Length: 192
Image (cartoon, rainbow, N blue to C red):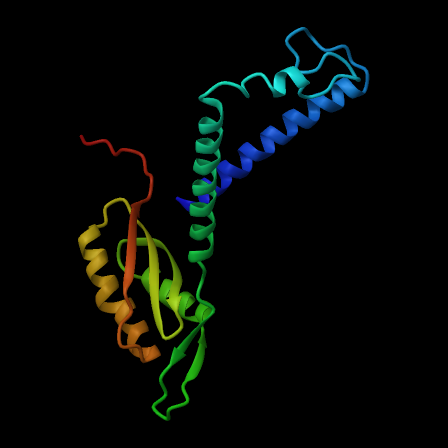
């Protein structure tokens, strides 16, 4: 979801900048703009004094401006916290029993967990991301199931085998896992 929001926001910002910059560039190069264009010629300003002060004396103007800016600020703060909150775990603290502990690379644990999950019956592909704190990691698992796989069986085997093996091998007390299941797209089969 966050990836889609990021792409949409960046796409809209890029589109606005390209359209605004392109229109100023085209008029500045001396091309005669059509009658509906934003600018009349190379010496035209973006907003005239009359356009800037048109609604200043209206009673609804300032509350509307403040509400729009507050809504924009809230949306940007939500986006910023969502981007900063979802970071990948770079290392996991493994309890070695001597009080020191050891550091396990997060990518290594992700790779092992994804490899074991990908070998389960009915699983075509698996992708794993570790999030959380290094002393209490959490796994986000995405499984792409084969067309005739049983989702319940795949989920049971994932938690009983792959997640349990990863938890015990890293010496973790718990390894919570959020699993997203998706079936691979396939053509319908004919029944005769």
